[in-house]
Amino acid sequence: MTMAANRSQEANTARDALRRARTLVDPALREWIGRLPEPVERVASYHFGWTDAAGRPDSAPAGKALRPALVLGCAEAVGGSAASALAPAVAVELVHNFSLLHDDILDRDTTRRHRATAWTVFGSPAALLAGDALLVHASRVLAEQVGWPRAATALRWLSEATVALIEGEQTDLSFEGRAQVSLTECLAMSEGKTAALLACSCALGALWGDGSPEQTEALRRFGKHLGIAFQLADDVLGIWGDPVVTGKPAGADLARGKKSLPVAAALDSGTAAGRRLAELVARPEGELDEAGVALMAELVTEAGGRSWAEETAQEQLGLALDSLRAADPVEPAASGLAALAGLACRRDR
Image (cartoon, rainbow, N blue to C red):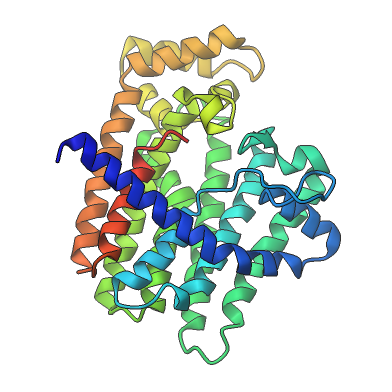
C-alpha cells in the first residue's frame, strides 16, 4: 500500500472514531445542557450548533470531538468499553467548550465554525456565564458517578488540567504585551493551554477502562505530546490556513501580536527576517493593514518559523506514538488512537 493510501485509510479511521464519539456523547451532552437555566442554555445550545440565534433548531458545524474520542479510545485501549467511559468523555468536552467560549471573548474572535461567535450574538457577559456553567457542569458529571471509587481521582485530575489550561491562557495573553517571547516559554504555555486537557482526557479514559498505573501514565504522555503537536498544527493553520475551510479569519493572531509557536520560533531565529518581524510585532494593534499582516506571515516563513513548527509537530507526533505503544494497547483501539493522532497533526481545520 502506498503512503498516500495509508494516509487516506488512517484519515478514514480517525474520522470514524470522531463520528462515533460525537454520536455517543451528544445525547448526554444535550441532556446536561438542558439542565441549565433557560437563558444560559440558549447561549450554550447556540455555541454547540444545535440552535440559531433565535433559539430555533439548527444543525451548524460541530466541533471535532477529539477529546471525547481520546477518552473513549483510551478506555478501550486498556480493555474497557467506550460506553463505560461516557461520563469523562462528556466532562472533558464541557471543559473544552468552556475554554472556547471564554477564548473567543479574550481574543475578540468574531467567527467560529463558520458562524458568529456566541459573544458577538448574545454579548460578552452572557457568553462568559455560559462558559462558567459548562465548567461547573463538567465537575457535576463526574461527581454524580455515585459509588465509583475513582471519581474523586478523576475530579482532581480534571481540576488540575483546567487550572493548567487557565494558566496557559493567561500566559498567552501576557505574551501579547511583550516584544520578545522565548521559544521555551511559548512551548511551556502550549503544554498548559492545550496539552494538559488532552493528556487528562487520555488518562481519564485509561482510569475508566481500569488500566494499570503504568498504562495510564503512558497514555497521559501520549496525550501530552499529541497536545503539543496539535497546538503546533493549530498555530500553522492560524497563519496559513484557508478561512473557507477553517471557519476562522486567517492572520487574526498576527494582527493582534499573538506570539504563537511559529512566530516565537521566527523571533528566536537570529535572522534578518526575524528582526524585521520583531519590528512589525512591536507595532500597536490596528496599525498594520492586510498587506502588513501578509508580510508578517512571509517573514515568519523566511525566518524558519513555519518549517520549525511543522517539523516539531512531526517530532511530537512520534513521541506520542512511542508513548501509545508503551501502554501496550489492544486492537482496534490502538489503531484508532494512532489514526486520531495523525489526523490531529495533519489537519486543515
